[in-house]
Length: 455
Picture 1 (cartoon, rainbow, N blue to C red):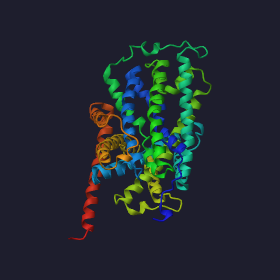
Picture 2: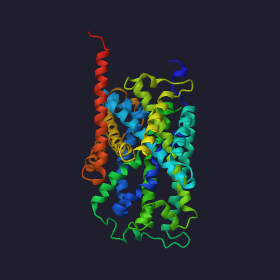
Picture 3: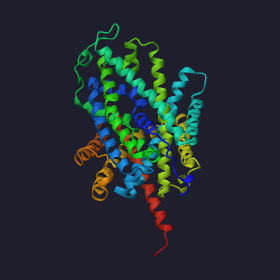
Picture 4: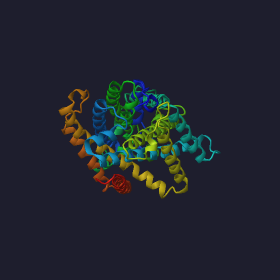
């Protein structure tokens, strides 16, 4: 294959590290975590720990497969190798769908933040401008994407580290005018004031906050050192997920009374206000905006690489498989952008119907992708041990027991959604999306059989 037709391997190890970390630290942590806290109380720490443990296991599985086989399309290819055409088709299209919806959601969220500062500008103008900006970033080169994500992720990491340090100093009683202590963990009805059920339902709600770290497995095919870079990125994600998420949530519930509804609605801002940090709301708005822009950037990257992989295997139109002279899949990037624009339009034209369906379905679809990743690892690991053991430079812990545990845990989350009123709509809409994809696969197979000449 000619050089212009190949992906550009220009992502450095520092890019890969921050792509993985940036994917984990999303706006959901800063904004959505309050919902879990208000329901589960201080035991929200347990909710995030349960979900975080499952995500860590999936990341380890992905690391094993990506180091052994850094393929274009990442886990889409692993699903094809391990589970066959249907599983690969579902994995690829569900993941593409997930990220193009994220692009629209984050663009709308970013517009709301910018609208607070410039209220005279119509929100839709901010939304379209943000999508256009990151379309250009992704069209320039993969190095531009990696560099942008490096700086966005760096800002988020620095913000979380400073939050953890300040919160820990406060809890220890060393912050100016701080009483310190951990009394908030048990003062208002105990550590688990509403019982175990809200803790388990909180784990279900927290699932969506963790998605994004798997982008690094897609980026592996464009890394200068895929094996070493992916291994290091996955290792860093594993312990930093636990530190950033569980550590910061612990500090929030240790500093704020969990039943203070007004404060818990914006937990991180409220903690900064308790610490008397000047302009706390503005500072946190900037961090959240950074998280939004990072998700937009990653959304266009991940969706375009997945669509390109789908096209190369015949699961999407061939036009999306092409690369320009810089190794950028231009048509695939633009396709994600077009869908993103359409979703953005729906957010203003039909917010309670079409856009509501998109919002309610994408999170469940992401869980299905993780389940398929785990099943793929379960089968591919045995094949690698049998045929290419030298490729197993990074191994899943406790195989196959922890892999099976992760599968059971994720399926339990899906099953639990049926019994949680707030999660039933996402479950139903997610299942509808899967049914649509199954129908699409049937049409694809029928078209393929018609195209093949009779024997």
